[in-house]
Image 1: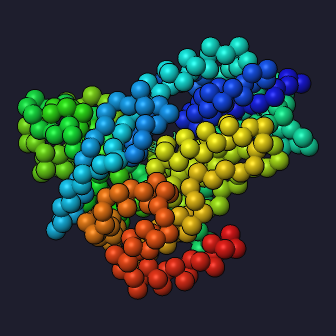
Image 2: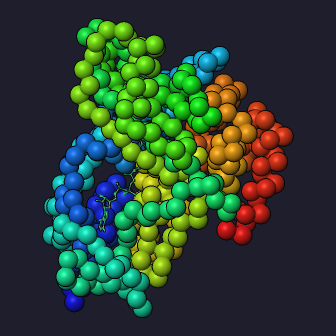
Image 3: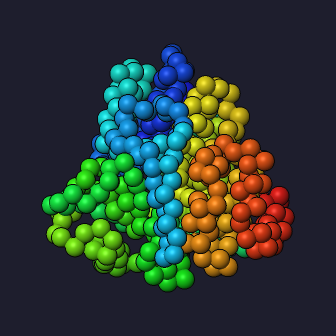
Length: 383
Ligand SMILES: Cc1cc2nc3c(=O)[nH]c(=O)nc-3n(C[C@H](O)[C@H](O)[C@H](O)COP(=O)(O)OP(=O)(O)OC[C@H]3O[C@@H](n4cnc5c(N)ncnc54)[C@H](O)[C@@H]3O)c2cc1C
C-alpha cells in the first residue's frame, strides 16, 4: 500500500488553494503529499472567479480585471454603486492554475497522479482509496471530489440550482464601460424564476455577458443563447459582434449541512459547503477558510467558510426564492438600493456585525422574512 502524510483528492480551485496555503504556511516541509485529479495538471480557461474584496487578497497579482463600480437593475429601478472601499475583482482559471501549479511543482514533497480517486474511506487513523488498481493510504485526506445532491425542493433545506451560460464577446465599436460591471440586471421575463444578466466589461469592446437563473429547471443551450442574444441587442448593441469563448455551469445553492469531515477525511470546496448558499460565490470565503486550515494544520478542527448565522439568513432568502413569495428581482435590487453598498458587501462576505445585519433586515419586507425565519429557525437548529 502506497502511504502519504497528506492526500489532496481533486486539483481544482479548492485542492490547489489548499496546497498553496500549506506551502505558504511551511506545512509541506518533511511531509509526503499526493495530489490526484483525473484532469492532471489543470490549465484550461474553465472558470472566471469573481468576488468583492476590501484589501489585497492572496492572489492579488493574478487579478485579470477589477471594477470600482457596479450597477443593479430591474424593470423599474436602476442602482449605480460606487464600491469603495471594495473592488469587484476577477481571476481567470488560466492564470490561477498556471501560478499555483508552478508553486506546487517546485516542491519535491508533492507527487501528482492523473486519475480518479475511488472508494475513498476513512479508516481508523487514516484514509484509504484506490486509483486504478493501486491502493493508497494517507494520514489525512482533503477531498473536493464533487458531491451530487438530489435537487430540491426539500423540506429540511432549501435547494436551488444556479445554472448559467456566458459569452465572451468582442464588438466592432465601443460599447462598454470597463470601470463598471452590471452585477445583476433583471431586465428579462422572469418566468416565475429569478433570472438576471451579468456583464463584466474588460475594455470598451470586450465583455463577458452571462445569464444566470436560480431555479431547478435547466434550459436547453439554445434557450440560454437566445436570451443572451436578445439581451445584448436590447441593452448593449445592435451591431454584429464575435463570441470568442463561452462559459457555462451550475452551482447548487443550498443550506444543506455538508459534512466537514469523516475521521481524517476532510471535505473542502463546494463538496465541503464552501459555496455561499444565497449567491453561489465561493472564491472569497474559500481562501479565508483554507488559509486558516493550512495555518492550523496538523490540527484539523473545523473552520467554517461562512459564519453560521449567515447560513440561517441564506436559508430564509433561498426559501422565499424557492417558494416565489417575493420576486428575486425585487429582493436583490431593493437590497442594494436601500442600503449603503459597504453594508451589503460586508454582509455578503460574511463580515458584517449583528448591528449592521439588523439595519439591513429593517429595509426588507419584514412580515415575509419574519414569517419565513420562524419556519426555518427550528430546522436550522436541528439540522
Ligand atoms: C463556470 C463556473 C464559474 C464560477 N464562477 C464563480 C465566481 O465567479 N465566483 C465564485 O466565487 N465562485 C464561482 N464558481 C463557483 C466555485 O468557485 C467553483 O465551482 C470552484 O471551482 C469550486 O471549487 P472546487 O475545488 O470545489 O471544485 P472544482 O474546481 O470543480 O474542483 C474539483 C476537482 O475534482 C476533480 N475530481 C472529480 N472527480 C474526482 C475524483 N474521483 N478523484 C479526484 N479528483 C476528482 C475535478 O477534476 C476537479 O478538478 C463558479 C463555478 C463554475 C462552474
